[in-house]
Image (cartoon, rainbow, N blue to C red; front, side, top):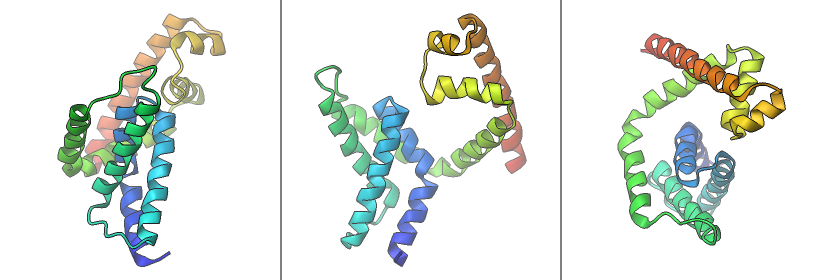
Length: 174
């Protein structure tokens, strides 16, 4: 791997969570966001191979992501409304303004990862169904053969537990 590609790869990997959040916020789907992130990486590595001069890797990747989002919504335009340019500009600006807070975001994701690891398996499984697989509580209740309201309460309590754990971890990082 050449030095330029190594440098851009490092920035890409360090910005992965931020890019993923950006893509998720605009696509509304974590699976589509993951696919787009992989597509961005392919385009970035191809651009480096083609000796394109990329000054700001994160902005360049967000620009590619923005175009992928447009294509995604154009393809789905028959069923949904496509976000307009003003919305895309606002989201871009929000992410640019928050670039200065990347360290805090990284601390947060590190703390979240640790706190999730410390949860019991059944709790992680429930959160996985809800937030990774985007299942509705009715679907989760069927899968786990449990009451929907009980699961809603359990998720609410787990979120509180995670919030407390994250705050403690972040204060340790500071």
